[in-house]
Image (cartoon, rainbow, N blue to C red; front, side, top):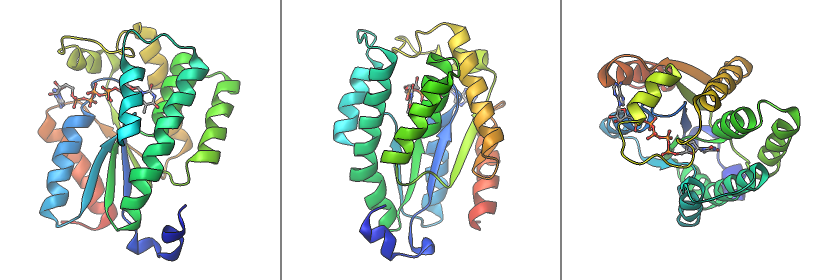
Length: 221
Ligand code: T5A
């Protein structure tokens, strides 16, 4: 944590909220709606995403998502954390210390689900590497994570409406089933932080479920 964060009480810091889920579950759509509600409530927010969110991390995102990129699993993991470290230091921590809410499309849970479960099949060596990187380089985790829960094939059908699949979207369906298991395991491990949101139904229905959770948690109308 930065020195400026240490000087502030928890109530002066912005809220840090992440959205998670498998491909195409509707995070981008839901975040747009949440940000509009925050604005209506006069809350200063920053909308960001991973991989990416800072100029340097966005450059790494292009490499990570490029179907032409061919790298081993450890290199992928380290690039994701290089991007996250820069995003954290350049964007997230400064915003939080100014009282700005940070709404982040994916964060460390995606690495555990995609690299830990998707790539490495839940291998304990890979999960330990990820835990170590989090402990060493990520001084602040989201206080609330909304896991948009949707059957993998329905999310893929939504995401598949796009013309070009990125490097992750090109994986076989069992890769995404393992990712789903990863998110499910994380939700069991962190019941206070990770809130499951049923992502079935219309965008309006999903947005209403999300606002119910956020408004109750942070006492908003
Ligand atoms: N990754 C990321 C890792 O492997 N490790 C990591 O540590 C991190 C941080 C990021 C990729 O990087 C990987 C994971 C990803 O594969 P991305 O393009 O940001 O790539 O991918 P996603 O985060 O999956 O984003 P998507 O845009 O694919 O999915 P969203 O944001 O969940 O879905 P959204 O809102 O774009 O919606 C998808 C489609 O469904 C429609 C939308 O209009 C859109 O067409 N839709 C609905 N349709 C019906 N009903 C609803 N309720 C709908 N809500 C949205």
